[in-house]
Image 1 (cartoon, rainbow, N blue to C red):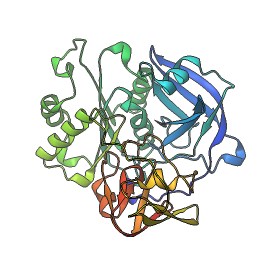
Image 2 (image 1 turned 135 degrees about the vertical axis):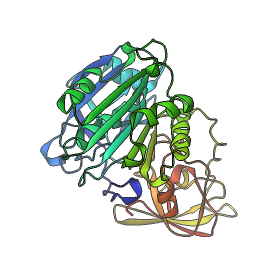
Image 3 (image 1 turned 180 degrees about the horizontal axis):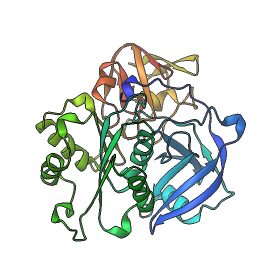
Length: 362
């Protein structure tokens, strides 16, 4: 099994208007949205379990993008899970107002929170809230591999806030000897009390050794709030789990963002670096003023560059530095092996050398 560093990156394509086939209510504030994919776009929108889709809309003349994880098993219909954020521009529209037949602008799937399904292994998932979305995709696909096993610890506030509750129960029933499912609720008492509380470090120190053969687990998958992911990584390290066996994805980070990069003032500004970006086989060069991120600067000449959150969380803007060096101000998306291999988040990367080449196709 491999994390993003070992997965080939597909060539990127443009946004496509996909028709909504279904909108299924999961709970009061969440829905699953299934898209129709025309035959001519089938190859572009074929996905690996755990990848995500970037959606685009124009609001008051401003382009807005959001990234949502695919929640379907390998080979299934293209489907995302969305939980509404209070006053959320995209999430409220998707959960409350979107209807079958509507069209949404969507980029082809991307992401590195994926697994190689060619060999059986024991996969343990630790998820909270909407973090279940990519986990459901990976776990259901893993079970198609003979002799593979799945253990899932899923944290929520109450029973009524559990996304995909019926599908998770069906997953357990489909292979009871190979699936362990533990719901942990923070605001609703459960029996045994072991399953009451938050999936924090204290709870995980008890749960994991009690319910999993830690040394025999092939891969650990973490998806949820930043604090939960940090706690889980810390506990797994305490238990002797090698870092390369732990994979994570964040849906949001409750930390202050870095200071915003100042706006591009022009290519003749003193201290500008020469930056070449490669995307879809085409190289474009530009002058990047000091202190401006690669993404913000390069978008002047390559508006087709991929991005979503611009906060160092989603990983959509991932690319490889093939010449020169950068300072990456924030990184919540790339695994250590990816960074070691030269991959960066261009929305967070500042040029440190006079010449820089960034390859989105690598």
